[in-house]
Length: 145
Image (cartoon, rainbow, N blue to C red; front, side, top):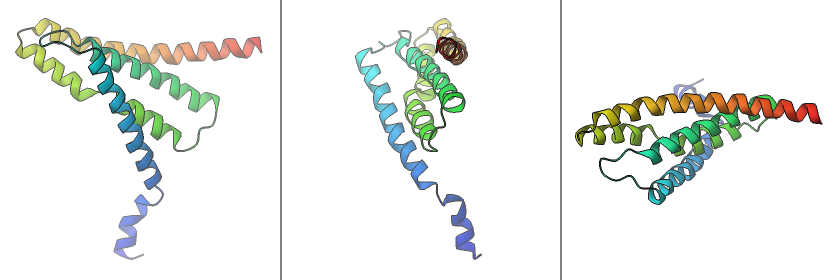
């Protein structure tokens, strides 16, 4: 195999994945921006919208992962589109970090630390709760059917 083909081989078949991640990411980022427009955070205020977006996005990721790994066989583009794309674009580490910096610079270090820890704890709890809750609902459904 010549050098050019060898370098191109890893990308073979990846273009559809890149496409769905890009489209999903645009949709997720637009939804996040929409949330920030609907519920803006004032200068020096606690960034409740960013916290909520990250926690909700993580909960949705937990539900998604149970559904596509334990319930139904998903097409190979579903996870990149919904998980990496939409939910990856919706949740935001960059805004989270910028919010912490803004709170610190505005003289609110306690709020910055609360945001820092609260987002991590909230996101992890949301994933765990969504996975556990989804599995419980699926088990309940199986028992009643």
